[in-house]
Image 1 (cartoon, rainbow, N blue to C red):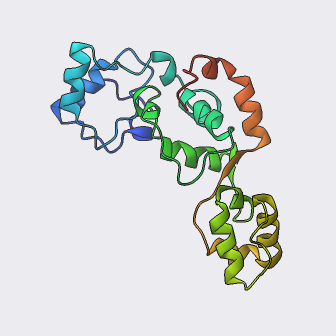
Image 2 (cartoon, rainbow, N blue to C red):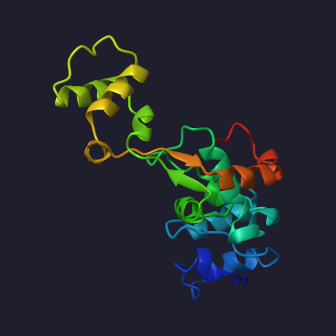
Length: 200
């Protein structure tokens, strides 16, 4: 059984379970066993691997890069770099099944290691639609905004709200790469090159 780095991604697994042992054995030739969500139906997945309708995470995606990151972290940086990724974005299945990472934890890793940052409420206004922006202005008794375009609505909201006030009005937050993140993404462009480009 491959238990290398087991506590980094798979501390939730019960190593005495036969299905868990079977999964770890399948990954014996990998650098480490990829992330296996506690909610995954292991018996069903093992059956699908056996008949060829599911595949293992490629070996290359289990090799750690600098700062203890994995190729899946690079793909998450690539995804964030599109400018549309927010705190409400759904993590695609491929993060677990193709890259072997817990995407939610990976995002935390990138923030903690300063490869990405979370937007402030003001910066995140771009992720609100015009009706929501107008509602925020209405709460402040602002008038004359009905025909304004989104960019001007955002400017008006910033004029009348402090960051503290605004942060309590909505939850969605955007993300962006730091310069370190930009540099890391550029350094590992071979990871992105191998990623199917229709899979955002």
